[in-house]
Image (tube, rainbow, N blue to C red; front, side):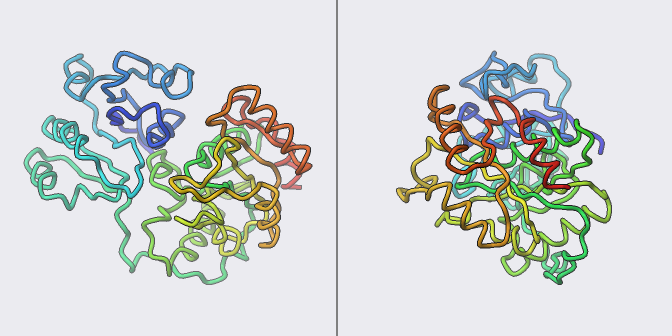
Length: 349
């Protein structure tokens, strides 16, 4: 895959969880060469430092105009770098995107607002000869696959990274695991199931929440079967979505049943009391482990999202969960996932 140059628009949201699309791209993408982030609140800073305190050599600019005025090469793409509740494009993003199009920069958007169906942007794109790529635009029914049972012919073992809530960093942990495996001689591939995964350039996957429900099982099967046949990996890692018991978007059983997944890494945020954007308490990790077991899969380890926790609290939760569950509990952003190598090797054997 030839990488294209891109800037990423977060427009005041770079330091928060809604910028998770941008965060994923900053942590790694085979599709884009990220030249800068557009965010008026953090102009002049390093985008990685704003995200997690680790510089990545990617500067933040106040606006698209500010970026272009600096004399840098015009990027091929401007990526909308946020994932918001409801997937609606905020009105205050439109001006920056309009300026990008007027300067010959194509747009990639992962929201449910389709710029290719927006009268203003469609007209601008035609006038300035740019592309509008809506990653979440549903594929035609004729291209979707129904579940057949072919999954039972797949040879590669599978591990799904599930979570106890949405917006927990499941995709990031999944990528860390893939990179760790490859570093240690395990040929691992990752199945993406969200718009950011497509933007990061993974070979196999689909966008879960744009797919007609009748074809979800079949698309999971298709992605895994294709990965097994074409890439022939030692291990297939699957990016989970939401959580088994999240009432505003229950998800997870599809991977375990339709994808015939027997191994799970479970992501959890001890500092989060309720499901995202609700007042409904998140069930205990132990009960989630037990529920996953009912589906015939085994939780191999737990990974922690450390939002709302200081160092002492994060380590306290890690030790307590490890003692309670009797399985490894690691802190991916703090210490990486190298500590799960033995777990993965044990599962593969």
